Length: 295
Image (cartoon, rainbow, N blue to C red; front, side):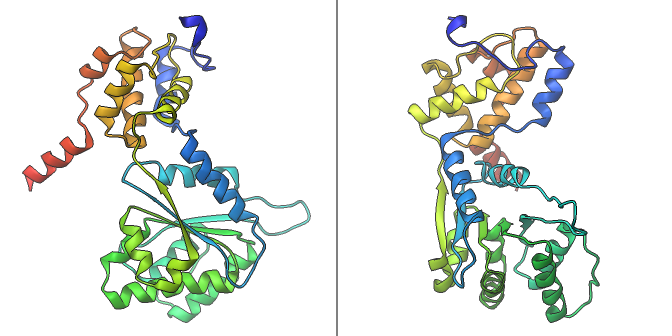
């Protein structure tokens, strides 16, 4: 059946060391739900400024591809400058929410991301002014805040204060804000009813067996620099992968990456059920159980 399912990876004939390096460095993305999220981000990026900008809440379980999607979107819209300009345009700015809801730390994160010097002990209003001016100068068209569920690490007053900052930035800059987090992000955003109405939720669920899941595995296989076809979407392999990964795309990616490296090392050049059983993989729930026992 190889002629029906050829592996056309451009590096498949490269030496093992080169292909293993490629597997270690290249994240795999390109599946239906990711495309929907990317399309929605593109729509927001070109949305005309208005006093009530639409925002997005990208939600998924841990290791389910949220940050990878945002990172890929960032790569598609890098900073640039025009020949006759003496400043850099940064269409998309992505920062991580501080571990506790702290307005100053958020501003520091934005300034750090844009490589702008600042005084750590500056007052909040001065730092806010600096951030607003900077985002306007670089003509930012979208602000992405990852790990937004960190808001819940503070008391109710801190949570409301931090969410008010997000609302303020969206209103004043008239740019969309994309918040990314786990299911706790719903609770974080919904502590402010006005803010909740402005954030359209986009869910990245765990995978289940079906046509989309099988297409996902086929897309993964095309990105693996193996010299033989594995037929990951076959019944036996697809169900084995689903069980071992528990449906999280990050787990699927890591599992297949480790399996592909083993297949290159041992000269097998394809992934089989037996090989998957030999790599010493622990499912997410198993790892969590081990951690709980240690505590």
